[in-house]
Length: 190
Image 1 (cartoon, rainbow, N blue to C red):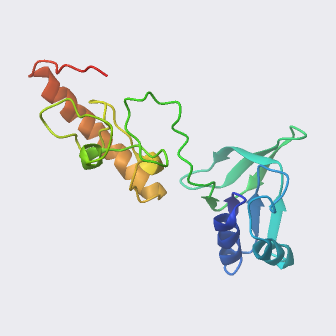
Image 2 (cartoon, rainbow, N blue to C red; image 1 turned 90 degrees about the vertical axis):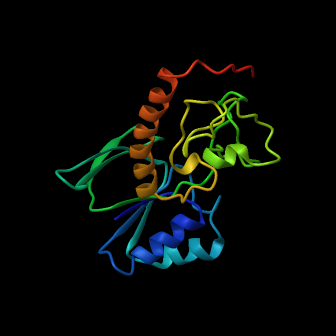
């Protein structure tokens, strides 16, 4: 089993998985665990023989037939790549949304998570919804622009939820186009 990450949640996951797996390998992009992980977790991980820590390591590919069977990892210092057998991959790389690149017209909460659906209409937000209809459930403050997954305000922060939201968003895009093809375009002046 592989755990990608170097903060407390990744350390806790690795320790938990080590109770059940033959081996757990932590893949860490940075030079150490100590930069973002509590000292007690670092000590526990170092004391657990079933956990390997690979520093300066990025996952660059995954492969398998109907399930994950291997990962390709690259050492960011040496550039060397390696294919490793893998049965499971857990990605715990934080909850920073990295949405600063979006235009101001896309409403976000104080931490940068994107407002969608009813949250676009929440009192106190500085974004005005320009249409008479309410936003669709995954629609942002820009009509016809949808957001799914962890980047959304109040999302469940789970891969399965993000995948499901992606499937739902496809239907919402169709609904959006169906509604705009029969109605005149709404003015939008941001």
